[in-house]
Length: 92
Image 1 (spheres, one colour):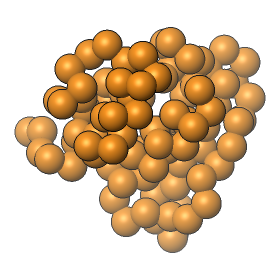
Image 2 (cartoon, rainbow, N blue to C red):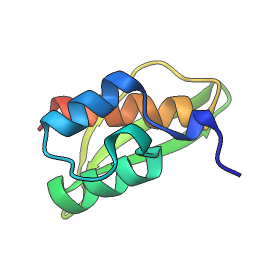
Image 3 (cartoon, rainbow, N blue to C red):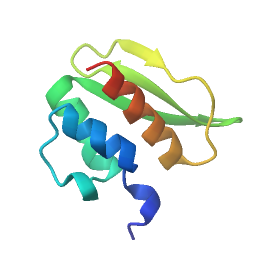
């Protein structure tokens, strides 16, 4: 079941629109934004966990090379994914 935590924030939706995302901005899910970044900008937002929590690494979707790792672990997967999407949008 999709909950409010599965959608991008209002600010992220605004930036997505500015960067050329053409989907439903007000209802963009984290997954849709993640897929758009991978398919249109070759940025893969990867979320993983360790003993400290969830963290995000950005990869070049073509070469597989790491672009950057987001500092600071999050308590929830969706928080980490949202932070990664926000960071990826800064690279566009």
